[in-house]
Length: 443
Image (cartoon, rainbow, N blue to C red; front, side, top):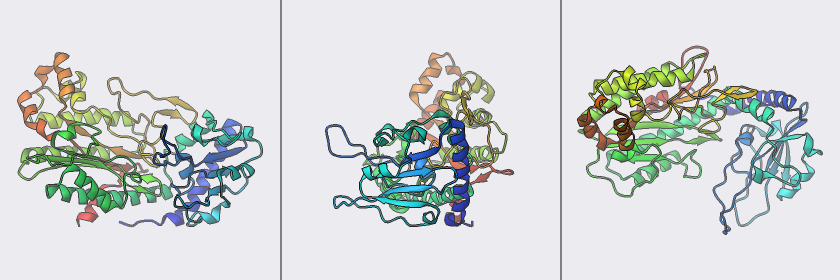
């Protein structure tokens, strides 16, 4: 598995961003693109700040994620500029001087206070498309987020450059390292908090650096889709373990999920293997011009086939989907775009001019409705869960006879199963970014 050097790929990435920005500005009728990195937010009635989160529009240009009060300025026909905030400060760590593969491509201006940026920004704020959150305002430079500009940039962010793919592969390597450590901790009988700590130690990132809060779920906790409680005592007996956790690489995210059965729980292990096999077929279906909505519906049929084989449902997969029974066992979407953000933007966009492609009826939590294109990276994350609230709704809807409740009672203590990889859509076969990393790590 060859890892490409992001530094060698960065000039072409920057050229793509400049072309996109030029077109976006033309769409919106602006002369300058101005992107603040964001500011620190403070808790109400307190002097403690929340963890800083960089503006995604900023880190698209630069591999910098911890430089608040900085700015990017792009004017067509000129070199892009970065206004780099490096304060005089002995209370906090000051960002290192600009360095790395990007510096030679920018005009760099160092400022010591946020207000010094005012003299370096374009003269007329009205001619600027300023992309950011309201708190990033500085004087008259108030984020306006013009729709023609944002729609264009976010739509085209769906197609990743080779530079972005290289960084996303790095995030896979880090994430898989954490997943292997977490599985080992589970096999040794650790509690959820300890498994989480083993993950962070292996990745080398803490909760503020990870792209999202780790889901570390033992036994029935796996039935809570976004379980983040991190229990300090391992349940007895240990039956199952679901981990949904990623890592960050220069602002790009990975998002990986695996499910494991404890030793001796062979039937649940067999169900995990069946979901895993189905998931790999779904990953292989990622190809150009394929409607992601259809992939989601196909996933429901496939997963209901698994439940049918294990005696959990009594009806056909097709009937389970048509009656809404499948949604009780698989209540979330098959996946989403991923990149600078875990749930990357423009998943519902009809075009680079905006508009919206609605979700299929009966599938309210699908996060991507676009047709797949080469360069898109999507997650494929089918799941089967035993959630009492949703199963009770099936009974209330009059479809209780479709379910074998004895089999539900058997599997309920395991919580659920989810398997998630990231898949790059190419001109030819799908490129699974996750599986080869696990294979190399296990080899």
